[in-house]
Length: 188
Image (cartoon, rainbow, N blue to C red):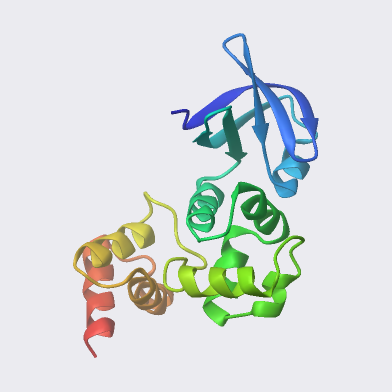
């Protein structure tokens, strides 16, 4: 499986890029948002979702890991294929999608071309509590604190809310102190 490609961009078109890595050109399907980000660049690094079918190997590329994770969760929804998932992520960022799902905003999701009422309802239902807006990246204290709380058995959403609630007061604190405060918030 191909997980990441980094190389020279030979062609950037809406929806696809041709990226050369080690002398091999890979045709990668992307969101329109990725197209806009890559349009003026010569080199790029893309996180890749590889789909193996009987008749082809199809690559879907994303400039950041959060978008790849949102894509993977979208295509796991019954009735949502890769093209629909790309359309959703062309309309909404990964964080916006998480906010839409959290708010149950059916109308905003239906504004995506190719997403009707039933598909939007299915996305909202199946992704509830699986996407979290503003999820911090790995490697920072906030992200480490959220990860630690999830490993202790708290939901991603509860862990993120408690860490964010204490972050403004204890943002400069060490990880241990941040965890202690977040745990206090969770147990109240």
